[in-house]
Amino acid sequence: MTAFVASPDVAAAPAPGVDVDPRILLPRIEAGLTHALSAPRLAGSPPRLAAAARHAVFPGGGRVRPLLTLAAAAACGDDDPALAVAGATAVELIHCASLVHDDLPCFDDADLRRGRPSVHAAFGEQLALLAGDALIVHASDVIAEAAARHPSRGLAMIRALTRGVGMPDGIIGGQAWECESRVDRATYHDAKTGALFVAALQLGALSAGAAAEPWRPLGQHLGRAYQLADDLHDAIGGADAGKPVHQDERLDRPSAVRELGLSGAIAALDDQVEAAVDAIPDCPGRASFAALVFAVAERLRPAAAAPRPVGALG
Image (cartoon, rainbow, N blue to C red; front, side, top):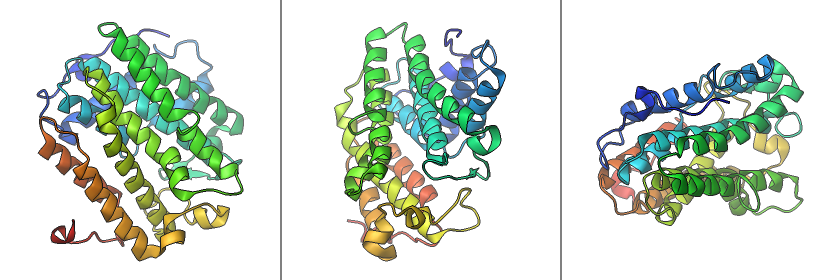
């Protein structure tokens, strides 16, 4: 594979420590993903494997996790924009890989993802499994090749990413809880969903030379909020879901809606959004980061799950 050399669009950073506007950050994410899965970078790959990998990543969903990576980098100074984009790219490659595997017949058996055929529905189960594996490996390679200026940062980022992916409590560990007869919902959700939110924020901080641990609580609360929203979407359904619904009931999986009821899950979602805002580390642009958290939360929230009035928060 060719080295990850950031294009001007990838490397262009917002004002240090201040700007977390998605309109600025999202084009950098798309440029990073496009470069990572470009024809020159995947030269020599089996053509259908490369096509399956691209099908998994493009067109994307909300790009929430890489958006948080770049926002954390901006809040910490973003002195190596190319490394920050590599971190954001890696996080989204991992997320997309997890969706490919999640949709497989051995798990959710879902033929629809983001409103179009899932990877195994379009390319077959074998290539879907291989494409997911390839994206996971590719994520670390993207970081490693962008870390020439700050190799110690790159190593720390890869370690944070692998902890968010593997065992004992990364997203693979979380998925494996579905194979157990007794499952604690909070443990299952913190691993399956929360671990990658933690990694996303930590990669952003590490890319800018900042400490990773202060960002863990924010990632945990955002992950819980995201999973609550996902459980609500699954229970409420709707024509805009873009994927099969009522899967938790069909597969007898732990669900906040099944455990807390619809109103209880909505209240828990509001609580986690409020806790996430409170958990934002003290950093330049903290108010902008709080606005971003609220914006992300509202985009995730099902239309039927209206938030508490602002005055009722806290």
